[in-house]
Image 1 (cartoon, rainbow, N blue to C red):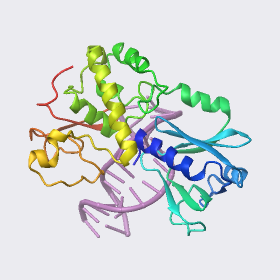
Image 2 (cartoon, rainbow, N blue to C red; image 1 turned 180 degrees about the horizontal axis):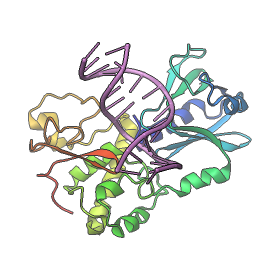
Image 3 (cartoon, rainbow, N blue to C red; image 1 turned 180 degrees about the vertical axis):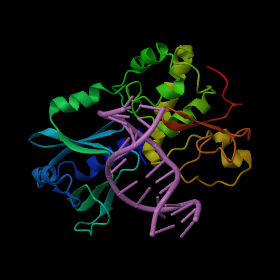
Length: 270
DNA sequence: ATTCTATGTCGAA
DNA sequence: TCGACCTAGAATA
């Protein structure tokens, strides 16, 4: 399930798998049929992620495929070709292996100016080396909106989603409803640096693990077992289990349209 | 069989 | 702020 790390991991996987090869391209479901047919037999050049957006480019073709997985989209690479189609497959890429895209929010062919427009509406992405965290800082520092809302705003910061926002706020002890302008610069610098590392780890492992070693299962005398979202976390969706560190009941509240989780005891500073 | 939920975003009211 | 939308698996009846 997709936050920015999923898309960067996917971009890497698609590049390693398909770049430099002629690909089969189809839309079993039909909703990307015309575009998929135009791509059939072309050489895939690269796959790149910006925030939660994926761009796939082909040799000798200015347009790029723009994919956004939305809440439940997936793009899964499996061995072999001519595999049976299971369920709704919007776009299938084949070349020795098969990559099936299902349930995307967006799958479209964009001209270069249209691609630029997508890039332009995104804030800095902690997973990209060309990102400037100052751009996010200025937005945050000038805003009265809660930091928990700003971290989810893709114009402010591209790539973090509901799990990373809850967990990064926990890791820095920040009360989620603190106004952006009350966040000290030093705190923001630490949050950005931490997000970079956490999300890089997410790209590497394909899951979101945010728990520091000193709070890990062995250190806390718990049985090591991953939660159903695929990693271990401090507060995300733990309202019935309590804070991983102090066991205080985790609070839940909708902020920026999504369920925010936090520990009122561990998270009290700005 | 049905309803619900999910790591997301957009546009209309 | 709300509903719509993309899909699949889990939860509920």
